[in-house]
Length: 70
Image (cartoon, rainbow, N blue to C red; front, side, top):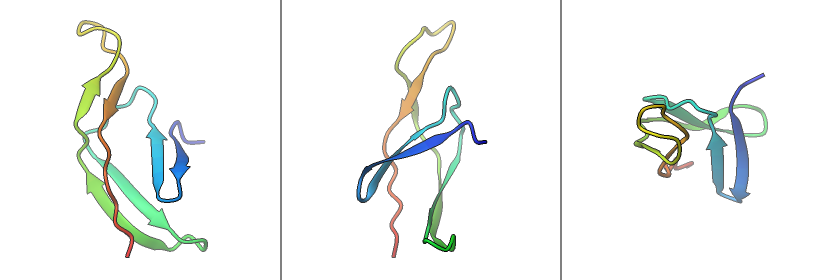
């Protein structure tokens, strides 16, 4: 089971929870009902710490990314 979760916010908007991970790159992929890839793109999120401390780290957030599905 993946340590990550994705939740639908609106019809065309989703939010992803990556736990305490702050990867340098993420791949966002849109699939159809059969699992075929409709669109895929690699993004480099700009992470900002939103809790904890500079010494110990803490949770981080990144701004939105947009994947256009043709």
